[in-house]
Length: 155
Ligand code: DQA
Image: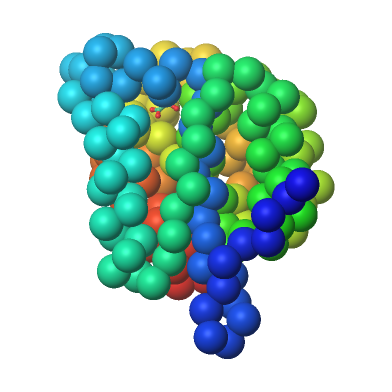
């Protein structure tokens, strides 16, 4: 069953989903010269600290499976979360299903990347996530997530 999102005194949702796609479980080990040395748990800790300061809660998840990300986007809508931060990893560049899922929900989705895909291989220059998202933050390493959370707090 879908749990309703937490809310503040005015009834506004304070939960932000942070959804991570394939290979992001390997952060810390994976190409640290590109993605840095923070693990996904480190990033989750940074986000929990910042969320507390902003009066929000984060629900950080990771899956290597495209359909899980689609299901979680639907769940974000059904439970009425404030926003979703989405780093879809390589699915960013390929997934029509994730693009369609973002378009099928009213919850604002903020695209997040540790690296700046536009400075990298040409196949990373197209973002099906970015084409459907409210906005994008990329290129600041783990801080991309924190900047995206701050943007979500202002929505
Ligand atoms: C990434 C960029 C993608 O191109 C890549 O496939 C990833 C990570 C990033 O956070 O920089 O898996 O989303």
